[in-house]
Length: 398
Image: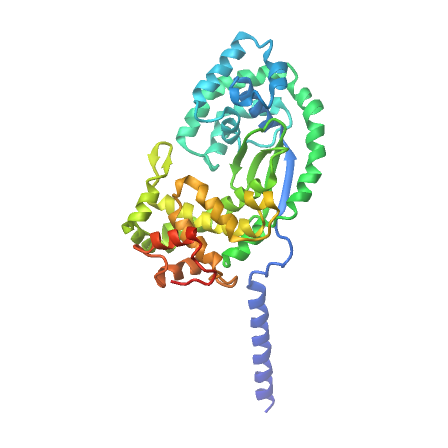
C-alpha cells in the first residue's frame, strides 16, 4: 500500500516538474508595453561624407549649404580639387556623393576623430571584411571603394589638417545635441518593432533597437545604412523616417513569403496580364524588375501602408491632422509609380476590409487570399479598379 502511494505521489511530482520545465523552455511572452528602443546620436563620420558631397560642387546642395561650401572651398589646393572631381566622376551623376560614401562606410567602427576614420580606411583587409558582411557587401561596391579610396583619403587628410573636426564640434555639434531630446520624444509615439510583431503575428524581432545618426549636413537626403539604422538631417520630418523603418523591418518576413512559403502561389500570378503590365512599369538600374522582387515589394507595401495609416504617417493625414481613414491610402496609391502596384493594392484592400484579425499571421492571411480565390490570375484588374472607384466596401469579400 505504501509503495502505491509513493508511486502516485512520484508521478505527480514528475508531471509538475515536466510542466515547470516546459514553461521554462517556452519563449517568454512579450510585454504589452512599448517595445522599440530608439538610439539617436550625432556622427562626425557621416557628416564628413556629406561635406565631401557638398564640396564636389553639385548644384543640388547650393540652396542648403552655401555658407559651408564657401567656408571650405574658397582656397582648396589643386590636388584636393582634383580628388573631389575624381570622387564625383567615380560615383557618377545618378547617385549623390555624400549618401554613397556613407553607405560604403556604414560598417566602419564608430570614429570620433578624422584621424581614427583615416586609420580604418587605410586598412584594406579590415575594410573589406566589414563591407562584405554588410547589406552592401558586393564585389562591385568593393571595387568602387578601391577606386574612391585614394581621392577620399586625400580629401580627409586635407580636412583633418585644416581642423574640420574642430569646426564640426564647435559649429554643428551643439545644435545637434540640442535637437536630440525633441527628436527622441517625438519618436516615442512610434513603436515600430512592436507594431510589426503584432501585425505579423508569428514573428518576434531579434533586435528592437532602431538607430538614427542625426546629421547637420544631411539635407536633402535620408540614408539607409543598415536595415535598422539610418542617417538623417536633424530637421527631416520624422514620420517619413518611421515609415522607412516599417518598410525595412517588414522585408525579411515578406521576402520569405515570396521566396519559399508562398512561392508557388505567387508564380501563378505571372499568368495575369494586368499584373504583367504593372510589372513592366518598374525598372531597377535600367533593367526590368524581376517578378519575385515585384511580389516582395507589393507584400511590403500593403503591410507598410496599413500600419502607416493607423499611425497617421501618410502625408495627407499629417497635413489634415485626420484620424485613420482609407482615403489617405487611396490618394497615396493613386500617385505612386504610375499605377504599378497591382498586388499591393489588392492585398491592402483586404487588410482595410478587416479580414485579418490580429491573431492571424500575415502569412496565413495572404495564404487564405490565394486559397479563397481572392488573389488569383484574372481577378486582379477588377478588384484594383473597384478599389479606386470606392466600390470596395469595408466588409467586401469576393
